[in-house]
Image (tube, rainbow, N blue to C red):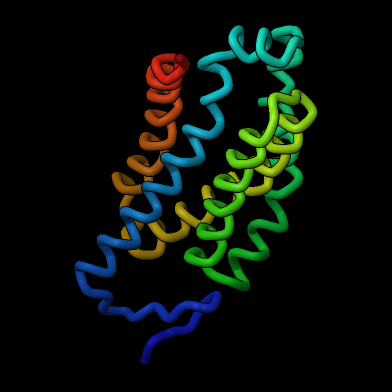
Length: 167
């Protein structure tokens, strides 16, 4: 009999297609979180000039993400238990997308801070949702290590790619 957890049904004999999809989605969430953390650092001097602020102020764009992320850890875990990894991960990805859209609205440092605070809400949701998908349906030490490696690699990739996107 399937077990219902957090709004999704997990069947003990999940087929390879469903398992593969869940693992790919989990790894994709890990990538999105890592990229979103690091994309500002890749172009910090350019952002400081564009916003008319110091490099230290640009550093606060990362600090605000981590501050809100820390505050969101317990609520994110509770929502994960209640709603399941698919819903929580999808909400996290939606918040990440919203944060990026807000940042594009205007060339305002204060709006960038709001965008990064929204990112701080979305990243723990996406990270924990993705990690739980990988844990529930893969669970091996190698697969969980891959989850972390994808997160770290996406940070490095953002540092390499984002400066190339700046016209």
